[in-house]
Amino acid sequence: MVRRVAVIGAGNSGLTCIKTCVDEGLEPVCFESSDDIGGLWKFKELPDPERSSIYRSLVTNTSKEMTCFSDFPMPADYPNYMHNSQLLQYFRLYADHFDLLRYIRFQTTVRSVTQRPDFSESGQWAIVTNNGDGEERHVFDAVMVCIGQYTQPALPLSDFQGYETFSGRCLHSLEYRNTDTRRGERVVVVGIGNSGGDIAVEISRSAEKTFLSTRRGSWVMGRMSSNGLPLDMNAITRLNNILMLILPRSLVNWAVERGFNRKCDHRLYGLKPKHRVLEQRPLINDDLPGRILQGAVVMKPNVKRFTDSGVVFEDGTVEENIEAVVFCTGYNGNFPFLPSSLSEGPHKVLTLYKTLFPPSLSQPTLAVLGVFQTNGPIIPTVEMQARWAVKVFAGLSRLPPKDRMLEVIECERKRNMKCYPCPRKASLQVEYIPYLDFMAEEVGVRPNFLRLLLRDPVLWFRVFFGPCTPYQYRLTGPGQWAGARQAILTQWERVAQPFRTRVVPEPESRPSVLFSPWLLMFAGTVMGSAAYVNMNNLPAFLQDPTALFDKKKVTCLRSDLQVI
Picture (cartoon, one colour):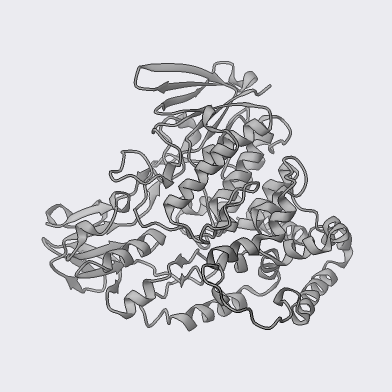
């Protein structure tokens, strides 16, 4: 019987793990190496070694309604995209509301997590910690690792000839804090992920010249959708998820790329990548095209080598008098305190079933949370991971046999390598709504659309056609929250609230776009066509429209695996 659970890390993942354990009647003990909660989102002037870190200006890439915990909406007056300090304040509100701080042991570092001799029967773990006064030894029934994957920077200096004699400074984005130290300099930023885009834009406001070097390019999108609303609220919907499954992928790629190019011609701006837009996550940045337009940021290909005072790029161009090179080249997800038998390869990469459970354990009492990349918000995904993990610990949800888990891991890796050639990156990719729905099914909280349609058609409409906000997974089943329905019905009010800082005369009333005849006609056509295609399984289709598509995808994947 699992009772005591060790939670390692008190960032957003650790906080939701503590709460989930308490909800299920377990006894969590959280070990946090620093003196505060927040993890990655706790800004510090000086980075701590082996700890995740952020730069001062960082703003969230996902909006507040999509990012919040499923039973704790963010304050209505919060901006839709928050500065890191506001998100940290939200974590404090969450911890205070659910009284989570009393389960946390601050300034306590976990040195090792090992299986006890009777692990095959008990599933228990021996944990060694250090709080500054010496080592302590503990025994726990289960362990939840919540330190994330942004602690070990990947700095590929050895890949570039001449870096030893380069007179400028080379640093990883982990060390970057603000533009003060780069004022008036000529700077190269390597990498065009979200950090690379942010840092290049910010440095360009005070540097003499900023060069953004990229190997593959990237599609760029802003945080704002039509009418100035948060993009993810319009993009991450169940209707769009179905359309992505039934429409030709080439057609969707063409439509999305056309929309991106209407705002900024990616070929003209030197941004156009080698891949199609749906094959990899786009760069989220509101300002990069404008900075390129102004000449403040100059796009360059990949760095080939260094000179004594400059950089040579792969197209043969040279930029001299470079005073700093900022590498935004990602991280290696290392967990040195875990048993080495759980990792594989020279970089000790963890093998995880559904990016959560090590398949090699005879007892499923260890979960590693937050080690994934998705096309949606992280916090609700980690929260659902915690809910599923606790159900597995308690024996209320069972994992497949080891061979089946390894088969699924390999199948998903091979599928993702079509878009992400690096095996490690491929193993981290998950699709937001399908991944959440899979875990929700295991927990018993996946929405039943047929029942919802019959009992509450207004709510059904908002759930199916509106944004897939986390509250949907609190409507029913274990952990049901009485406020979930109201949270869904009022989510757009909270989106609008921070804009209401100046009284503007109301226009003449017009029919709501949500219930316009054209939208209803379009929705009816899509649903009718999909229902006709699945006529033999009509009751199951009405209960969960995406389920049959998911099954077809799984069948396809199994066929691919057999061919391989």
